[in-house]
Amino acid sequence: MNDLKFAFRQLLKNPGFTAVAVLTLALGRCAGIAAEANKRPQPVISNQHPVGANVERLLREKLPPLLSQHHVPGAAVAVIRDGELVTSIVVGEREVGKPANQNTLFNVASLTKPVFAHAVLALVDRGQFTLDEPLSRYWIDPDIKGDARHQSLTARLVLTHRTGFPNWRNKTNLQFRFNPGEGIRYSGEGYEYLRRAIEAKLARPMAEIVSNEVFRPFGMTNTHFVWEPKFEETFAQEHDKQGRRLTVRRQFKACAADDLLTTINDYGRFVAAVSRGANLSPSLFREVSSSQIPSSILAAAERPSDFGLCWELLRTDRATALVHSGGDPGVCALALIVPESKIGVVAVTNGDDGWPVIEAVVSLVLPFGDEYLAAARAKRERKVNHVEPPTRDAPAK
Image (cartoon, rainbow, N blue to C red; front, side, top):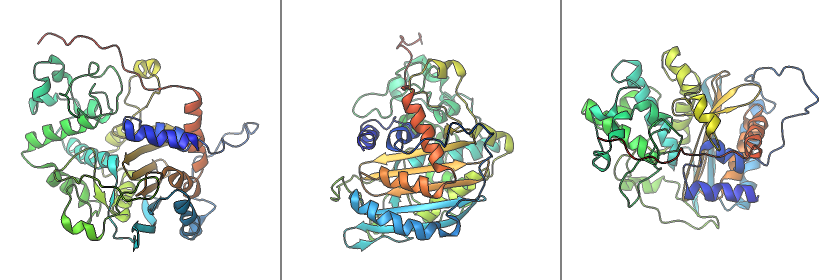
C-alpha cells in the first residue's frame, strides 16, 4: 500500500512520472510471473480470458467494495477484444448522491495526449506534416527564441518526450533542461508546442483538427476539450483521498496535453481503434508501437521509459503493450493496449486513491494482466529512473 500511495503522490507532484512508472509502483504489488521453473516458450496473448462473458458481472461485483475502501466515488471501465469495444461499465457515483452512468463525462487528464497525437499522426500519414521537419518553420515560443536549440524541435521529439522541456513552465519562462533529443523527460509543454505549430501550419484550431481526424472517424460523439456549464449535469466531479469533493479549475481553452472530457464509451472506441492500427498505414503504426528512443539514451538513463510515438512501451515475454496514464487532482486514468492481439482496457476513476481500483481492473479483465503488472514490478526492482543529460550552455544563435 505504501508503494501505491507513493506512486500517486509522485504522479500529482511530477506528471513526468510516466505510465510505466505509475504501473511500477501503483500496480507493482501484484504477484510475479508464474513459476520460473516453467521454461517452455509462452504462447502469444490470445483474446480468450478466463472471465470471458462474465467480465461485466465480475466488475460490478468486485469494484464497489474497492471504491468504498479507497473513498473513490466512481469508476468507468472499457474492455477491448478483437479490436472492438465489447464491454463498458460505470460503477458508483459522479458525486455524492448522483449515480454515474454511461453518459457521465470524466476528466481523463493526460490521456488527452494520445488523442491529440493520433490526430497529428493522421496528418503525417497523408503527407500534410512530417515527424522530422523543424517545428520552428511554424512556431517559435518567445521564451526560447534566442536559444538556437529551438531549431532542433520536431514532432518526433515531442511524441517521445525528448524536447528537453519540463512538464510545465508554471510561473517561469520556458527553458530547455537538456538539448533536444539527448534525454527523456515527460512534457506537457512539448505537446502544447506541437499544438501551436500544427495550428499555425494548417490555420485551423486544434479542436477542429482532432474532430476531423479522430473524433468523427472513431465515433467519439461526446468528447470535449473545453468546459461548458451544461457539463455540470453529467460530469464526474473530482474527489480527494477522503472522498471529499475538490474544487478544480476548469479548462476554457483547448489543451493538447490535459483535461480532455469524455465518456467511457468514447475513449473505449478510441482505444479499440488504436488496437487495430488507428487507420494508419502499417509502416507508421509500426513506429507507433516500436521503440523510437536511441539505445544510447536508454542505456544511460535512470528509470528508462521506452516510447513508441506517444505511447510508452511495456514488455513481457508474451507481447508488448502500449501504455498511457493520466493523473490530476481527483483523477486516475489508464489505457493499456496489446496491438498484437487487438486487446485492451481503459479504466478511469474520479478519486485521488483510484490506483488500487485500476490495479484490480487490469488484473481482472486483461488476459495475463498480472504479467504486465509483474513486468512493471520487475522494472521497479531494477531501481532505474529517469535521467537527464548534464545541462549545457545553449549553442550560439
